[in-house]
Image (cartoon, rainbow, N blue to C red; front, side, top):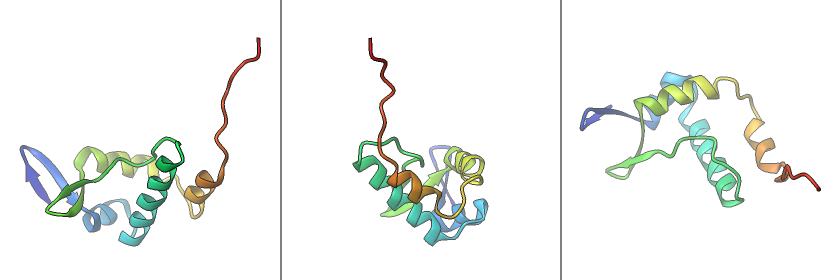
Length: 92
């Protein structure tokens, strides 16, 4: 944990501990999140902050991850990656 300008940042390991996920799971999620962005899809995870070349998440990121990601199950991210992009347009 680091406190920089009043903002608390947690390492990947600490983040995993708080949301009950392994660091490898978090790394996989981040990799899939990057693939989603490369395909033009919206990001699911907040972008980690790099401090001395180590990934950190802020306390607000941690709250977001804890709230949103607890509903994800094995394979959910992969399914999102494989779904085609759809446009909701109306034909006039």
